[in-house]
Length: 169
Image 1 (cartoon, rainbow, N blue to C red):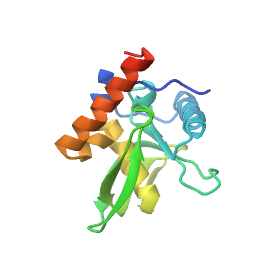
Image 2 (image 1 turned 45 degrees about the vertical axis):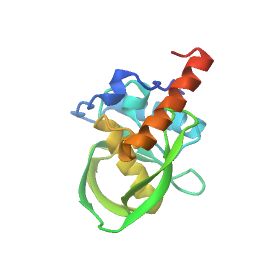
Image 3 (image 1 turned 120 degrees about the vertical axis):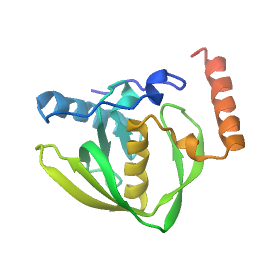
Image 4 (image 1 turned 60 degrees about the horizontal axis):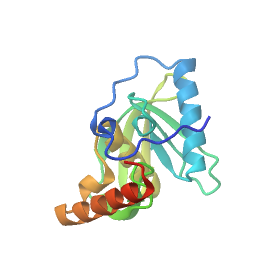
């Protein structure tokens, strides 16, 4: 089921999510809801805090056909490449606003999969950007935190103006 996204500046978006103790049907149902919400955006990743679930859960699907979802619990970056890539990032929590963010081109991530097994996986290019973006969300970090203070201020001012105009504040 598609879930509503929290809107910035909801304080939960600045809170670190709690670790998941076990993978069970409840967690799998949250992942399913997250995938429905992510595909409806459309997007290539989503972290549970973005829909108000304060647990260390994320989903990704950067495949061309949007048919290769990865479900992650308690993801952690083990290694990052020195080489960086720049991607334009955004968030449904700050709708309509995007910025170019520089992140490591490749990362190795450890996580629990949908069976509860520990996995270590290498992510590159857009997959690496997305998994880092989602882990940031799990730590209460937003994509605009990677911008210069001036660019961040401008982006947030535009967002606030748009929210006020729509009556969402």
